[in-house]
Image (cartoon, rainbow, N blue to C red):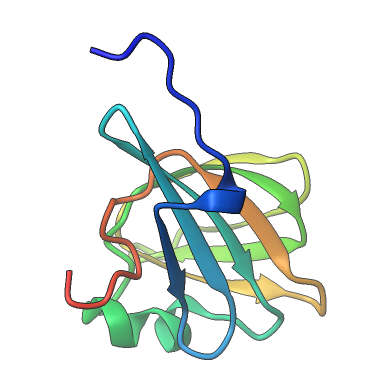
Length: 121
């Protein structure tokens, strides 16, 4: 077991472009995946990741920190909310989300599925 492990998002393990608007950069440490994602204005999960995931709603859990921008999240049960800079958010599987406004939403996600937005996963 490694006692100390460090990686930079400047040298990621994987880069996954979303369909048309944004990109996720992924590192894996001790078997856990951490993502830094940039969601461009106009990004919406149901339009820009659903074609990759092949599911009706996002089935990845998320536990993240919003660096900048805003995102609206609607759960499959109708519960909804909005997150912005300096917010910490936990989102369970079964949701859609989209960028609010004309600023990219930058987020670090400590709880994403290792296969989030991964083609042929």
